[in-house]
Length: 207
Image (cartoon, rainbow, N blue to C red; front, side, top):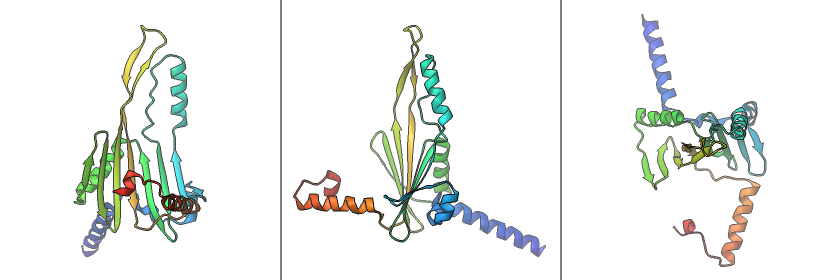
């Protein structure tokens, strides 16, 4: 009986720790070899690891459908995504996941509710931004609403108007360590030279 009770307690603790883990944060601590095994490609210039998944078959079908005058789904495939792991001088600086699947967004929202996370949300019309802090990380989730209408058909009699609107979700975890790479250093130097010449700053820099 004691063994059964102990096993149940262990399972409960394990489930709580899994539930409490920040979504996608486990990738921040992956080694170079682990990222390579996960098919991430390393960009030496920007010191980034990038993983892309694109449904090429879906794109081919869309082109063929358009040629034949049929309705073509021009929205990104819901299973497509891009993951960018930006490295700092010693550790990971940030992790950005760009995706299109509404179910994935709802999973993150459920995680926020289940873990009682306080979210600050701003809305500028087509762009919604959610920000929150968790486990020494600052996190931002952007929802960019893309409104697209399209027509299809080769003759006026066959022309149909279709709604191809979709959302672009961008989920970024910031560790607090600045990004570091040759590219970032060059960008800093360009900004410094521009400031030294007395050129006017961007509006965001003046905020």
